[in-house]
Image 1 (cartoon, helix red, strand yellow):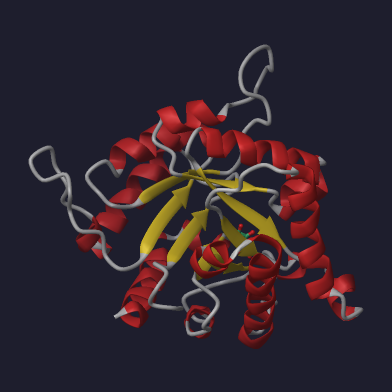
Image 2 (image 1 turned 135 degrees about the vertical axis):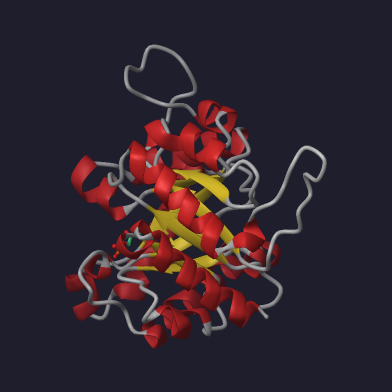
Length: 270
Ligand code: 13P
């Protein structure tokens, strides 16, 4: 972590949890992390603690979670968005709709969507534009397969994903975004990347941002690590100078574990 950037712990629930779990989950956060709660109409500006938290529930529960966390400084994120702006696109949800229901963040290009649902770099680029028009912060997911890592091509592949996205965007004026480095082989497997490898990748991404975009984005962009993060292993990632938080799947489904990880991040953020 670096004191110039506010760390972010993003909880990606994927297609898990149901309506009744949402209430229990938020109640547990309220109990375990009271410093994130307490905003009211009289006191809307509760000072956010030094670590940002964001929950990415399944789409139908966004409004419910928004309501359950309304008096908190915890952010809300969507797991996906339509590439289209509006119209006859059955089943799609637009970036403006996400903004309407209080979404601050949205995941883009998660490897599960790229590999299983056919999402392409062109899709990711269009979705990124839509999100920025709606002022929803994109969380762009990148990362290599096991074969690419074993072939020594992890950094090359991951930076190529970013370069392809930049090419797709053309002269589009890139605003802010978050990048999540999620090696595909580490997702849901319990075989996480070593903190050294994750730091090496984060440093390479930051250099790419500096060389391909600009100094401001290189210095300000949050870089998250994702892939089998848990309360038992999160600390050394957060101690890496170029890693600014985590994108957490399985372990974030348990509110107590998520709160434990937040506690560790808060302690390191001082
Ligand atoms: P796990 O933490 O379950 O490995 O999932 C990581 C992930 O894909 C978060 O987006």
